[in-house]
Image 1 (cartoon, helix red, strand yellow):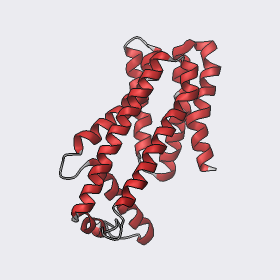
Image 2 (cartoon, one colour):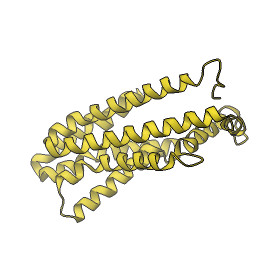
Image 3 (cartoon, helix red, strand yellow):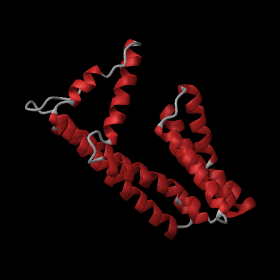
Amino acid sequence: MHLALDLGCNIALPWLAYKLAEPVWGEFGGLLASALPPLLWSVVELVRHRRVDALSMMILAGIALSLFALLLGGSPKLLLVRESLISGLIGLAFLVSAPFAKPLVYHLARAMAQRQDAAEAGEGDGCAAFDEWWREPESQRMLRGITWGWGFGLSAEALLRGWLAWHWTSERFLALSPFVSYGLIGLLLLWTVWYRKRFAEPDNEAAP
């Protein structure tokens, strides 16, 4: 049910909101209306879990870019590419952090380990096992590789969505681009699982 609501608020409702609002307020107003369902869903999830996750930050950043587009004259194309700009910036952040001693994926994985331990035990910082695992060269190599992979993948997704936004109609883009994004993200997830299993062979130490 939660997955169905998530997909509905991020795929079906934005397209429906655009279809209803565009005849009344024009293309720009329809695109602003299409941003409301994912924004409301993000607020609901924020209230439920009492934390700002990556999706919430992307939605809020998308709204900020929408307002910025309004100040620039309200170009519909700028509204369409707002999410592509966010995912592109995230991909760039992954690529920039990859050569560092602790890339971006390290901090994300450590935060997940901490939340998981807190949910199971309710005490401690939950990162002792993770920190010990991180000291292994193979572990560092694995997370660095994942950082590179997601950096290039998100950057490619942003470029593709940007191209589609400029060459497709707004209605077609709103209806089909989420499937493009979900498909590419799904491929990245499958690649991540495969890549992680390469380091979970008997000769390598598995991640905690």
